[in-house]
Image: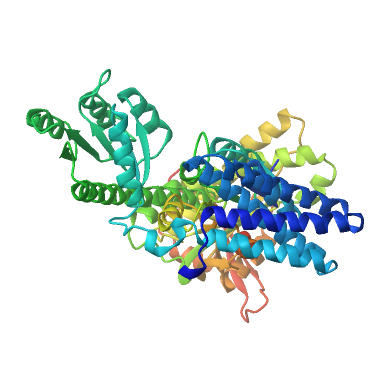
Length: 481
Length: 124
């Protein structure tokens, strides 16, 4: 590898020579090229002109960056043209390939790319802010630290240091104690007062005679110190320790942010279906609730507005939505206040479950009380409807209890906490025979009730998939009300 | 409102920006550009691009800082960022990843490699 390395001047000469050759072939074939390809060539030539300009001026760091960009542009256009021409003009192909070869060798002479020229990085590279009023000190620190792979920003005064901190996220601050204007102690005080900067380690630089000053700084939050003139090895070691401290802090802050973001997501996802206290409980129990799918004994509620489809045909779409939202909004509030989980709304129908994800002693009773409150709320909803000239509505509610599978159901792209099982179908069947304003419950639910209720008539219905007829019971009210 | 198929290219050097825009457009992408880190953040929030290619050495707000800020802003934290680093220095790569970039490409860009990285990050 080393025998092929060209000097800076050699390869830029090579490059310009190759471009000149390319230009000859280009001019010769220009008539056959599409407009876009001609433009690409011209941009490539502009890039080489920039290389020439840089070559003739004195080298500095900015130009190194500029040169790199010019080479990148030439490379990009060359590759694009090679692809585009696809061998239609062999002479241009050859010239472009030659150019790419030279750019490749130019890049491999960049000092950063050769492993021998890269100094051993003593520590994890970081962003260092060096604050010193003496330009030669800033330069020295910059040189030491960049050689170790760090990125260095400098500030010539306390004021400048603070405005840099506001702009750039730094890992360690190297702070000279004695400066005109705002001195190091004041900068330190402001850093430690600032909520976002407080965790950034500060290393104080001071003269050997100022031990009292250093002690004062450490007392007010400085992490470390160095005497002037400082030793390179000591500086590297302190910086390394500082960066490590900052990394741990950043990691911790990242974790916290991640956790907060996750919690927000969970609240937003489940909050639409579950009451706040259930979401809080899921989040606070370290093992969480097992939402992977398990068998649960629950009480299922299904309700709908009788004759809603016919009703909605005579209303404007806006009025349908207004009516539905008033109704569903009120029902959601009632269901959540009784710890029910809303599985879904299907048009005007509501499917809710009591007993999952969290099981309670009185799930069946909660469901019955909830249903009675829902029926009672219809008067108020109808009053609001009438006031707006909208028709009155009546609702039927069915309850059934049994074992269902509860869990996150769906595909990876779309899933929700939901329920499956025969009791769900039975509930739908009961709901189908429930009349206007009625609350009908199955025998299974009745058995689980511990409260006293005024019961109405019982009916027998047949359900597909069940050999025996099902007995359902009307609930008229709560005896304690 | 949002441009979920666009690439946001953040590059201060006009010559290089121009080249990459032409190349990316020719590869079938719609491209929007920004010239510094602050503009990049503004355009991310405004246009919601599918992916961001961000040079790290930028004026006003540099690429590292812009990436860190993007990661702290919930509205744009999900947009993948590929860092375009000046040279193959390990410190640049490490800093890019630490700043929250999803991947990096070294300049001068290996274009097929860059396309592969874009493809990988823009298919969920």
